[in-house]
Length: 384
Image (tube, rainbow, N blue to C red):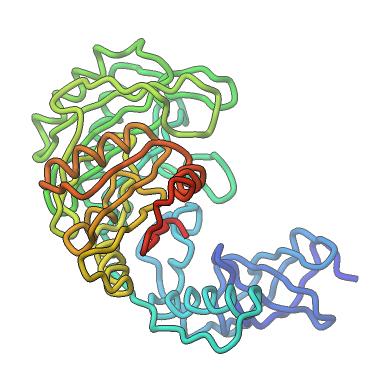
């Protein structure tokens, strides 16, 4: 019987979607080990034992996998942001390819499915949004990213998945917050004010929105001053917003936005269409990869100009609007009212007259449309 604190020699033969390597003991029990790669041979310390599997940590790397690579991030082993930072991008794509195949073949039971080649993207500086949780550590406010499976903040602003300006802007905000002694929110006690520093930038436009997620508006004047100072120092800032979230929850955004400086929204371009973004708008965080994805969708749809396209979970309408030039009619369904308003505005701004957007649960709206005998030729679902 395998027990906690036992040591086992393992060969890692697979990986999970969470980035854990998988090996098996001599009696066949699966062991999940973080920060390992397929092909590693390790000495493993067992830290948790369940009925049919267990978790371990590396005690010693005996034979390294050829997939291993040096992480260029000093906190990647602590931070919960990057799952595959310790392996090459080629190996990461292979893992993701296998996850998709397993979903259909092993879990779904489908056979003889023709899988196309996975389409990779950029690996650095590609994200158009960052939401830094703020916490108090050693008597001052810090921000960064949550450690894996926790809400403990790992202080770090230099993540290379995001534009360099994001880290500099977050640090600038922290300096002001600490100077003015604005208290960081404490999830356990509900005390403090500043919960998140949220930054969004248009990938093509370069327009930046700076958003402070707060428990209440007690420091509204200070955040307005900070926003104005940031806009003076950093090129591209077009909007500074305070989002108020008074609830004791791990949901980041509250329902109320207050514009402190500049515009209520920012603009970007996606697949040739101008897009307006509010703090609440859903927008794919990897714009370049989203454009590849949407173009694939258009290719698969084989639109000839007369089709009705139903875009479920449409957010700010980006997918439907990218299809609008080649379709007869676009119908978008989305539950977030602000996103629906964004979608309508985006359609108007682009001169799109063949798109309609409805607010409500996507499944119920689709059922309502069916009852009204509105039958789409193409349905786009993201997430699937």
